[in-house]
Image 1 (spheres, rainbow, N blue to C red):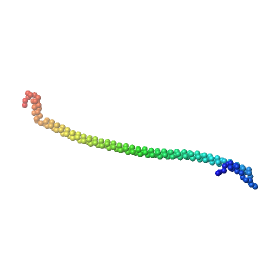
Image 2 (image 1 turned 180 degrees about the vertical axis):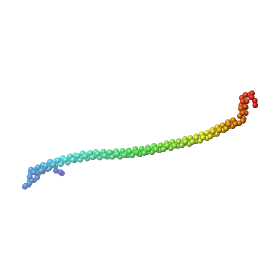
Image 3 (image 1 turned 60 degrees about the horizontal axis):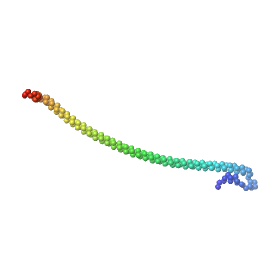
Image 4 (image 1 turned 45 degrees about the vertical axis):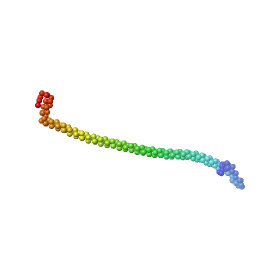
Length: 165
């Protein structure tokens, strides 16, 4: 067990023939007691400070652990959000591709229908032109025909019963 200042103070030495000077020993012991008390006080203060710092370290260690867990949770949540965003992006892309394919197919279908309609209109135009040409040629032939005068007489006689051929 370590010495206390009281132990030092109460220590008595045996006196011998030609021993130490008692006043000098007492003065030295008083100085040792004073210094020893100061060392003990400083030690106590340092122990208190160590205990205080140990508690703070424990508190900060707890905060650090909590922060590390929070960081891990945040990282996992971030990864989850990233994965979900990638999945959603893929779904959006697939949906866009489907819509694009549908639109392209509809456009191709309309294009084919329009091409068929154009061909049909060309055929109808050709038939119309051919018929119109035949009609005009028939009319021209009638104009060139000598029967025109005869036809005119026939029409006039048909209209007026008094005229005979």
